[in-house]
Length: 496
Image (cartoon, rainbow, N blue to C red; front, side):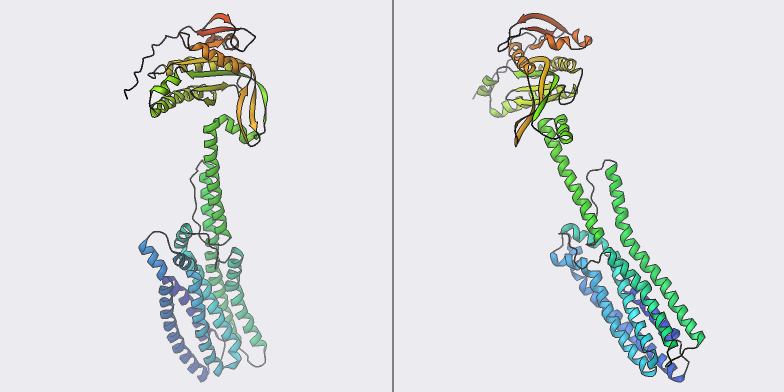
């Protein structure tokens, strides 16, 4: 409300100085009387207009003040009032100045008809200047309130001038209107009906030029700030995003192109957060490496031949445990079992490809190439056995194999999974069944041991060669030599 008085005061000073001192007319007794009468009329009109302006401002901002006092989100009426208050207030000032200008123009043109064009133009110029300053000051001051209103409701671009309109308004109010006044002074001087003295005309032109400089500078600063502030805000937000920030949002100031840009930035960040969440969920289901591969190379069906190491781990007696224990206890045991499996495999840069009931299949060397895949799989098997031995009531079997397999997306076009298929998978599965009866609970094939590094081979011992079920080629077994055979405690099922 104080800014509205400031805008009207600026227009009043400009009009007063020009009409009273700037009109280049002879100082006749009639003009002196006209000046005195105009001053009184102008003062009365200005006081009445100021009171009406404050009353209108308070009435139009009443829903906004009620919302601010209440707190929370605004209603639709309160939101519209917050967004449209600057324009409504500016229109009230425009109407008041049209009335004041009409009264003054009628008084002056009665005495000096030749000044009609100049006086009317001056009144119109003052009205438009006050209109522009009222709107730009109000938009600037109420910007935080408008941003809060937009944050609680849908994006509303009604009654909001765009950047082009604001620039045109700045040019029209700051340059075009005052220059028209100078042009009319020149036209009046050239006409035969009314002639100004050279000194009076020079003073009038200088006053109008001063108005142009002050007015254009102030309007340019307000218009530039209305564009530069949100641009700086977006620049700071993008700098935060470049540094790794994720939860970044900006305030939406209005419904102009800048406001739509701010809305677009917020929507872009929301979509990025959703994609990041989907990627994390995708990675949790299929593995981070598989998720990255799908994002970079697509998800077409088919696979490629890879040299991989496969680790298979399975619980012993899970069927009996499920029959003897409450379901929640069985689920807790499985979750603890899989937690250790995932942690160990991740530490050795492997991929837990799938969970099959109470078993898990881990792959090393796919989807990312890894030359030391057998070494990582054998080391993971030893660490996994030690970690799972600490879980009471859990007995397991672990099998490790290595060789060529097909790794890729298997399934239908609308439902598939990334997996590995080949002889190493089958061999690891058969070794797991055999390991359940072996003292170490860990068995590996000689092929996996052969391709491992010498430092890892020292922890293993080669054993007998047997024929595994479903395989024609015989497999030479290997097991850890420095592993202490744990005693698996028996867990008595609860009574009842």
